[in-house]
Image (cartoon, rainbow, N blue to C red; front, side):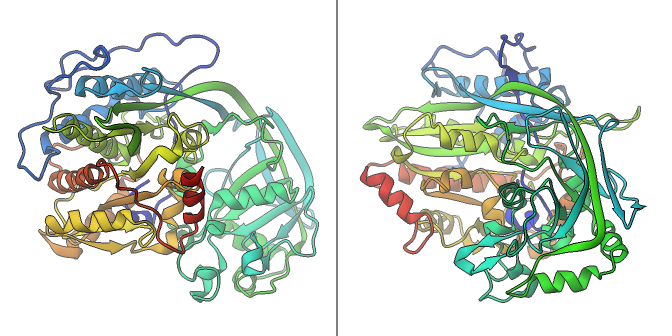
Amino acid sequence: MTPSFIQKTLLAGSSLLILSACTPAAEPAKPAANKSTIQDPTPLPTGEKTTGIIAEASPEIVVSEEALAQRIAELSDDKYEGRAPTTPGGIAASQWVADEMARIGLKGAVDGSYFERVPLVEATLDEAASSLNFSVNGEALAVPAGSDAIYWTKRIDEDLNFEDSDIVFVGYGVVAPEYDWDDYAGIDVTGKTVVMLVNDPGFATLDEALFNGKAMTYYGRWTYKFEEAGRQGAAAAIIVHETAPASYPWEVVSGSWSGAQYDLERPDGGANRTKLEGWISHEAAQKLFAASGSDYQTMKDSAAIKGFTPSVMAGAKASGVVKTKIKHLVSRNVAGVLPGAKNPDEYVLYMGHWDHLGKKDAPEGEDGIYNGAVDNATGVAAILGIADAFVHQETPPDRSILFVAVTAEESGLLGSAYFAEDPIVPLKSIVGGINIDALMPMGRSTDMEVVGFGASEMEDILKEKAARHGKHLVPDQTPEAGHFYRSDHISLAKKGVPMIYGSGGVDLRNGGKEAGEAFVTGYTADRYHKPADEYSSDWDLSGIAEDSSILYEVGETMSHSGVWPNWYEGNEFRALRDKMREE
C-alpha cells in the first residue's frame, strides 16, 4: 500500500518469500553488497552490534538519506525478482532483511530467530483450462479474460465449476444491521452468481447520514464483499470495477490478481467462500445489463437508495470452470527486537511489508520484474533506519522496540493478519504500533498525512514531534478510498492495539502542493504496481529521511515507561483495547 493521497487510485494489497512446508529450502545465494558498507550478509551472533550503515546526520534527522538509498536500492534490485513468495529471489530478499537486522544489532524476536513462520496456500489459475462465461437468453456475451474479467478462487480445490447460474444484482453486496441495510433481503442466492458494486452507498450519494458519507467503511472493501457472498451461499461473486469508487484503475486489478495468489492456510479449506471470485470491467457490466434489458446507471443509482431490492437479471446466466494448481507453503515475517533496559516485556512496534508482486512473463527486451521500490522497499528501509537509530542511542530505551517486516501484504494483509492471530509477543504488551508503507521520494513537505485521522492518542505525540520539524498533521485527503482498511496496521487495530499510519504529505517545501500532487499522480499512473516502480539514484530522499526521523521520535517517546496511548474516546477499537489491558 501507499500514502493515502496516492491510494486514491491504488489498491492495497502481491506475494512474499515462502519456504517449502515439507522440506528445508536450499540456502539462497548471498546478495551482493550493493556498493554500500555492507560486506558480509551472514547474520551476526545474537546481540553482537556493528556500526551498521547509518551515516552521520544532524541531531534531528537520525535516519540518513545515504542509508535509505542503499537499502532501497538493495531490496528493489532485479536479483530479488520482485520479492515473490516461491522464488529464490524472494527467499534471498527476506534473508537480506534478517541479515540487516542482525548487522544493526537487533536480536531475533522469535525465540532467538528472526523468522515467524506464516502458513500460506499458493493458488495459480490454469488460464488455458479455466473460463468465465456470460450469456443472455442463450446468446453468449463476450467478456474477455484480462481486458474485461479477472477471476480466481479462495477454495482449496483444484477443480471447480458451475453451470447456468442465474445472475443476481445485489447492489453493493452489503449486510449492515447497524445501518439497517441488507442488499440480500428477500432473495436466496444459493448457487447463483451475484454481481455487485465497489465501495458503499455513502460514496455514491455523498450523504453524510448514509454509512460514513464520502469516507469508505469496511463494507466498501472488496474483501468484505467476497466474504459476504460466500456467507450467502452464492456460487460466484463478481464486483464491477469503476476507477473512482475503487480508487485504482483496471490495470491494478488485472496486475494484482493475475499469476499466483496467496491466502493463509485455513482449517476449512475456504469452504465458506464462493467457487469463483472476480471483477469485471465497467464496460463489460454495461453490456451485461443492457443485454438483460436494464440500464447499468439506473440500477446503480437504485442501489444507493435505502430499501433497495436485489433482483435476478432477466435471462442472464453465468458459467465457470476454475482449475487451479495448489501448493501448501510456509512464508515468514521477519522480526528483530532491541530489548528494553527497564521494561523489556513491553513493546513499541514498527511494521512495514517487504513483499511485492514478483515477476511476469514478458517479451524479450521488456521488463517483467515488479521491483516495488516505493511499495514497499522504502518502508522497510525506513524501519531499518529507525532500528539503527535506536541501537545507537546513548541511553537504551526503557521498553523493547520491536521491528516486524511482514509478508504477503499485497495478497490481502496476510502476514500482519497472521501476526495478529498468533503474535510473537502478547498484544496487550504492545504499547502502540507505527506502520510505514510506500513513502514518496519527492523531498520534504510541510505536512504529514495521517490515515484514519482522529483515531488514536498516538496522534498527539506525532503532532508534537512533527511540529518540532515545522510540519503539521493533515487528515487523509481521500477517505472515500478506505485507506484505513488497506494496510497492515488494520490487522492489529482490529485486535485493539493502538496503531498509527502516517507519512509525508504533498505540500512540498520546494514546489508546494502542485509539485507534490503531480509527483504522486505520475507515480500512480506510471509506476504503481508496475515494473516501472524501480529505484533511481536521482530520488530526493530528504523527505523520507525527515519523516522517518519523526516516526523514530514518536516511538522514542513511547519507549519510556508509563506512556500508554489509547484509541480516542468513541473510537470503534477503544473497547477492545480497554478489555485487553484489564485482562
